[in-house]
Length: 220
Image (cartoon, rainbow, N blue to C red; front, top):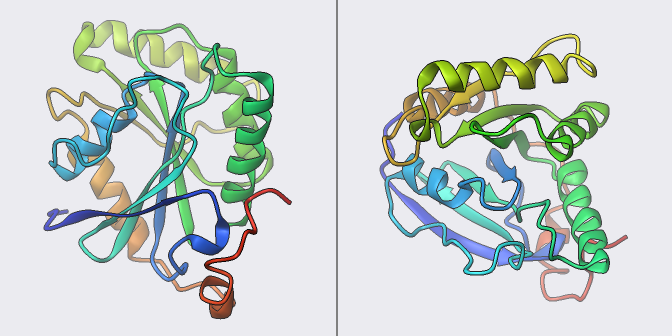
């Protein structure tokens, strides 16, 4: 896939303020400091398009980026930051849960995993929840340039083994490095293949116009 354009569209916490669900969306999510912003910037080759917060766990917004005027990258808040309060975590969980389960045009969730770490409980539990909700997802192992290829494969094998406690099959996975550009073609190729089968889902167009300025948030 050739990336001709990528632009920030909107940042918000309201379903009604999201773009109408007429284009395929791909959400990117992971633990804080997993390298999500760097990965997004690498994919579209625009340094600084997705911005890294100076305070991990602070950003609590859904960010939409329109790529090639055809599909969206959706940058979701990171999870697992220890200094976030319990109330903030609860709001995040409800906020993200509603987006992931109700967004009509969401095609796949890319769950980012730091390839240098042992399997983390919070990552495994999040993947398990996606599976229970039947939300399609793929694994993106980040920061592969920080260690040897054999070490990365060793860590991936450990994560896959842990996943098999919940899943019969391992979801698609990609090994990436934002600094080296590793995995870019594979991730974009995957998105291109999924885009070919996209059909505009049934939705109420008035919901995304009449309610755009209302106070209705993700909370239900």
